[in-house]
Image (cartoon, one colour):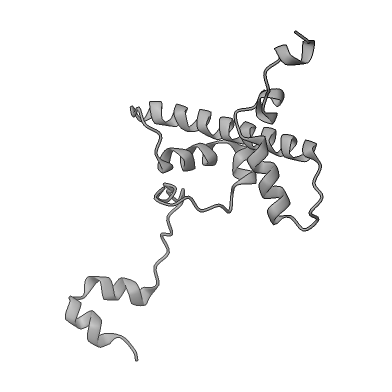
Length: 135
């Protein structure tokens, strides 16, 4: 047998040692990018970057889910993981994650100033407060 026959065919993802499909990323780059000529290495690099980001986000979200005593990662955990990490927050700060809720935020100093008119209205009954308002 010759040397070439003994080797099995490998996918681009296997050659690059990546989990994400390099071929599908290359196909989408060719389909949706403006210049139709795309280097094969561009797809490998893009797949590597996307895989790294997924690993970072899922690792942080897994830590958040274990802190909340859960076994399953839900969108809320992903959002909390992104908010915790400064670099991910900078990268994905304007991203909206569906079904993740809002960030809990407590204002450090509540406003204690009240105008005289509002203070007088707060001591009055609801009817007096309603009828004494200016139109």
